[in-house]
Structures are given as C-alpha cells and as structure tokens.
Image 1: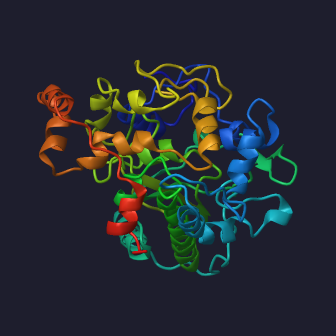
Image 2: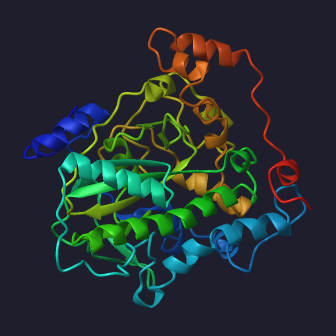
Length: 396
C-alpha cells in the first residue's frame, strides 16, 4: 500500500492497508463538479438532448413507449418510488442545494443542549446499529471520518458552479448504512420498471438517515444526515466493514452482493469503529469478467485494477477498477432510465452468504471450482418486466 500523505494518522493508514486501498502520490480528493451526473448539466462533452430528456423523464415528462418494461405503468412506478427522496432533495432548491445528492440533508431538529450520559463506545456503537435497523437499515457499520474521501467542491445547483463543501467542524465518525434493493425488480434490468428498485431505496434511506441523525442530536451530539452528497460513500462503506470493492464499481456485500444502496451519518458521538474485512469477494472478481462482458457499451474493465482511464469523472491517484463513465451514462440517457445489468448478472447478487456457491467462491482453495461451475451453467435469463407485474408486482 502506498499513500500520498506522510502525516496520515496511524488509524487511517492501518485501515487503508486492511481495506486494500492503494493511493499514489497523484491522489487528490474528488471534485463533485466532475461527477458524471453533475457534468451532464454544465459540460457540453456530456450534456445532450438525450441527457436532458433522461432527467426530465423522472418528472411528468416520462417517456413511455412500446416495449416491455418501458410502458406508462413502468415509468409511473419508478417515478413514484423516488417521491420521498425528491421531496427532501428539493427543499433547499432556492439556495442551490439538492439535499442528499449535492448537499447534506439539513437538520430538522437542533442538537439538545444537554448531553445524555453515554455508555462505553462499544456499547453505544451496538446501540446505534440497533436503532439504525429499527428505522429500516439492512446493514450498518461505523468508521472514522476521513477528509480524503470528501468532495473538494460541490455544485451550486442554481448555476452549476462550484461552492465550498461546508460540512461542520468537529465530526469524528461516520455511520454507514446499507439498504437492500428489491431482488425481483433488479432481475428486470434494464428497464424503467427496474428503476423503481433504486428510487425506493433512496426514498427509504432519506427517511432513515434523517431519523437516525435526529436521534443522535436528541442525545446532545451533532449528526449530519447524508446520502450521495458530501463524500464518496464507497470507501466509507468498505472502511466500515460492510463489503469489498468489485469490478462493477460497486460494493459487494456478503448479504446482498452489489444489490444495495448506502447512506451515512456524520457525527461527533464517541463510537467504537468497525474494521475493514477480507471477505474473498474482491479476490473472486480478479478472475471474473461476467459484468464487463454483459455491459452493452463495454464501460467496465476486463483487466486488473489500474489508475483509471483519464476521465475527469474518475478519481485521481487510486488504483482500482474504473468505469468509462461517459459511455455508461450515455447508455442510461438512451434508455431514459438507470441501467444495472452489471448488478443483475453479478453471481454474488444471486448467491449470497450461506449458499454453497458463495462459500466456494470466497475460499482461496475452491474459488476456481466456483468459477468452473458457473461457466458450465446457462446464465439466468433476465426476468421480463411483464412477468414481474404478474408474480411480484400488483396484478393488472
């Protein structure tokens, strides 16, 4: 492991090593102005009539058409699933903040003036995880705050110009939560219907992070609710012990594979942290290219981790698998919905922890046998959206 920072605190240096992070001297925090979705509003190399129509389709300008999975009913469910997230994200639009995406979620309750008497950091950490699950989180881990993963700048959404990333001072820990996406809907990717799996979890996590943050503030400690905003959640999820980084650019969790969304709460509450875990999932990815081969626009790499493809939408100075973000989002724009074929075809999506295949795939001795077995099976077919409506959704 290499690091660009000779004064990196020991606890971050140690967790980098355990997480398998490889940062070079060229590392620099990512500027959210270069996120592919933000670029689609200001960068003429990305923005097009198709990308404008993509964003518009999430409102009343949906683009239903003939084709299973892209009917008015499919778009209606997808857009309805985003509703709660949209209500929250639009609250501060007049201030140029899209809460949960391009700005942290503003506090609805103040920090209590008197601090509650706390138990040990280990006991409080266990309690926080219980409360997170009570509110609806499927996974929860805790790690130290690490400014390297915070956006160097964030957009002012009124003008799509950069502004400071103004996370409050004094925060010490990050509580990371995972939210399982609906397995049946994921099986229908790519379709507008499948997008309901994404939207539903963003709406769920908006409520969950706000409630957990309010609970902590009621105890007298600061807590900032956050979704895709403020900092990269993938390194935080890995540092919190929730999974490993996969070839498909997603966190692979033992419980759900890549079929999970993440949210986070920044806090100054003293909590015991979790350690990154060696789970064997990323090791399996080294010799598996199912997701890359299935990508319609070949946006995923088939080779080993590297330092990226030179796109401004790729973080600099981190050796990892990196996607062609422009090709990926271009395909989304053509579909008028998100595409997660790489999530659907990932074997860890279908064979979670506890299954025989998962045990073989994550064991150094039997990993090759797991790959051999998959290669001799016919890949599961995509679930037709019309079938989902019959067996998984509301009957027509």
